Every structure is written in C-alpha cells, then in structure tokens.
Image (cartoon, rainbow, N blue to C red; front, side, top):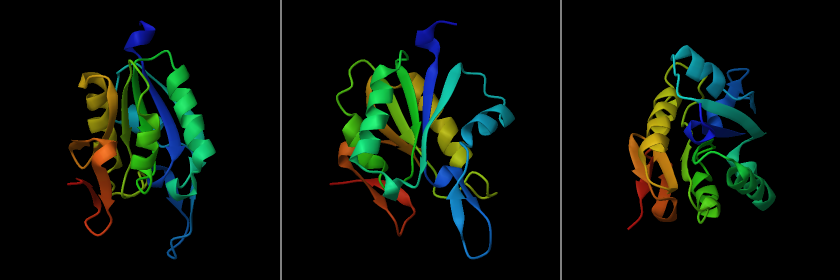
Length: 165
C-alpha cells in the first residue's frame, strides 16, 4: 500500500459523533464514530483516522480551524476526508481552500451516527467515494450532492445544504 493510496480521515466532532444521554437531549461529543462505521460496513479502502478534536462545530474557533488546516496540509495523503459539524462546515471548508495537490472532502450528519435514522453512514460512504474520484480542491459532500464551500449554505429549515445564487 503506497501512502498516496491512503485516505486520511480527520474527525473534529459535530453531530456525527454526538451521544445522547436522556430524553431532554443532553449530549456530549463522543469518540469518533467513523472507525466502527467503516468496519461494520466492510469498507476496505486504505485509510487512517485521526481525531483532531471533539467539538460541536458552533464551538470551533479560528485556532481550531488552523489546527485542521495544518493537519490536512501536513498529511502525506493526497485524498482527505474531514468529518465536521454541519453548522460551520462551509466556514472550515473556506479555510482549507488553497491547499495544493489534495482532494479534501468534508462531510457530517444531521442526525448522530448513534441513532437509527441517521444520514451519517450514507454521507460518509458518499464522501469516501468523492474523495477517491474528485480532482484536487475542497468539497462538501452532503445529501448525495457535492458542493463548493465558497458558494454553499446550510438550509436549517430544510435540513440540507444548498448552493447560493
């Protein structure tokens, strides 16, 4: 396995990793859900998972975004997947712009991976396929669509992402 074949997966927290403890929706960001998800779905694409942080994306600040950018830039992989909370995913995507020679795909979930009706598994699978096939650049892979973070917003009412303009 050549390092260029490996997909580096960086997790940052967000809804995908939320664990709920009671009916009042108290939650915390748990361990990255993606290692179990990939194993349970028999995914064999070469990958490494690095948990960068365990934060809701509304709690991410500029220093956190620089940590994510530095990890992506320092990776020896040319294909990167970043799991991220949906509220500020496009903000981080814009910070990742300009990293040359890498295909960077961001994804997350509207519902935690730990709940049955989650979109997490589909989004991660879709994002893994996108990371393997798209040319270098930064992308958001959500709702079965690929978005440019420079022109994308989260439609909270519609629980989806939409292209601006």
